[in-house]
Length: 345
Image 1: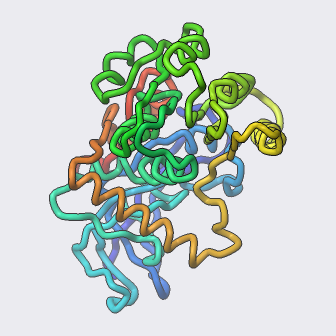
Image 2: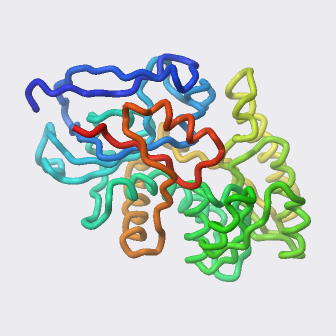
């Protein structure tokens, strides 16, 4: 163990404004079997942490806790060197919580080696976003010749959905605000202004409907996403951004959305829907779920190394400026992943 080492981490004490996030320090605990201490090189702000701040993430832990959905860093210590990771090795993890710290105590079973030649910030930008995009494309069975619609195609998940769908031979329609349309075109998608009549524009581009829609917004607009599908098409819902600022029970918007999707699934029109949750099945079979996450993450890193996908980084903040990082992520102006790095020594 590293003697006298300290951890600086961000505590989310309750439902607070971004300014209510606070830094705290504590001693590095003694590692138990199967654990590693990782010096964080990069973490980030995703929609999950934004919802956690509001107390609205579906299965977040009780307050207070340290957010941080994923991270990349260097192993500083391991409880058992025979577990396959060595001191000095670069690793990444989809952690769900705990990543907003300059050192993270992680389970070795959740770590994935980072290939040589990849920067920490670009790796961070594709961890949860890349796995999410891959899984959703698999569900929708997107392939060559398909036409798909990606809402928020400028975002962290959206931009990777565009790149991976195009790599698989699909035509992509990206729905974004006007300011982000040039970037979406650079990715090779057809850009549609979200402020216009999106359904009408999509019908002009795909008169028989599209093969898949990826919707992170939810709310009443989910009906529009459903209406754009052709027979045999798939709607993948993976967020409730439309209800982000609504008060009340945090679970109700998600439950209402899932209920609607389940109802649509039984209609005799050949379409299918799902509400994607990256943690589905994790409690039922933790070993299998962890293995699948590691395999997905390794595949994402291979695609990043090969240039199949490129990381979209909106902005980089030091850990001590986490409040500003969260405010920026929630501003609606960020294009790509908001990345957080340790403060300069």
